[in-house]
Image (cartoon, rainbow, N blue to C red; front, side, top):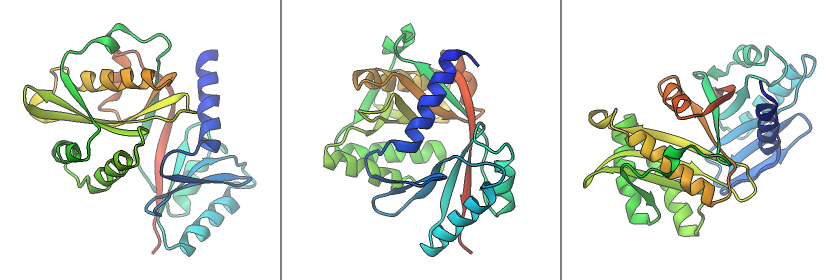
Length: 257
């Protein structure tokens, strides 16, 4: 790993420990950092600093804590998190280990030319009534319920927050793709989430147009890097656009019996 990427990874770890985003509450403990939404709808362990000697006790503590809340939670494990066998320990304690995602970053200090290209129309969802269009397309693209995300986007718009935004790509008058952007004035990173295009319109540049539109907005909001947790389906596309591999991550979920 290059010196630049090591510095970016160190900044990412720092923000995992300390950055409080819109709609979230952070609880920093000696061994872990807990994260929950203000409305109590989502809980997670976003960062851990453990050793082979302390990992088991910390895992049991977090299970007991969330069992007391009768809440499921996600332990966001990264490949460079210690100890080396932490993922297997989480599995041993009953966590459901999700698919590996590649953490990719793009340097916005020197953005590639495609960032400034507007090949397709992309609408930033900044009015509550536009959220319905976003939700409809997202549910078609990903074949799952998007009511939770739609509610979050509506709340951000009503509160005047620009930290969470949805985007819709259009083929003429037809909405054909979606994506989300998460920013924070104190963060070096702008996060890309939920990018996808309807099957009939794939391979025509709509995905790239959605990435470019979000990159331009991220630059305008002062972000230094675009970050995305990419599945194998999107990783090759993003790496062709210039994204670099930083680390890997796995969502690890524990649910009360």
